[in-house]
Image 1 (cartoon, rainbow, N blue to C red):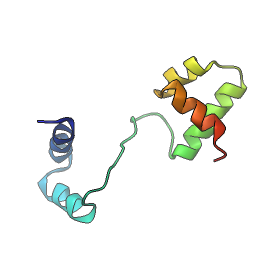
Image 2 (image 1 turned 45 degrees about the horizontal axis):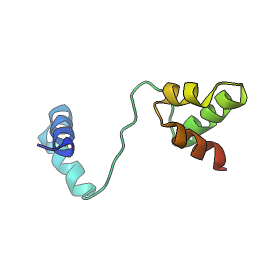
Image 3 (image 1 turned 60 degrees about the horizontal axis):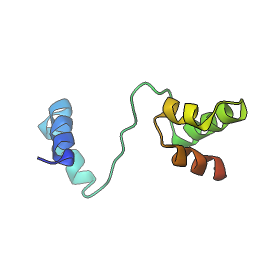
Length: 83
């Protein structure tokens, strides 16, 4: 069983067969990233703003990458983007 099958089986166990079938019907072939629960962000835009604030306040890229569980290269990309 691959990683995707394991995740799908876990989702089915959480939401039940009927809702799982409905999700599959409504979103066939979609890639979905489920963010870590409890990070407090409602959007990637909010998360990226918070990352920029941390860097502007003097935190190192390494500290920020660990805090947000992102690679250092992802942090640099976020800092370069204008969104």
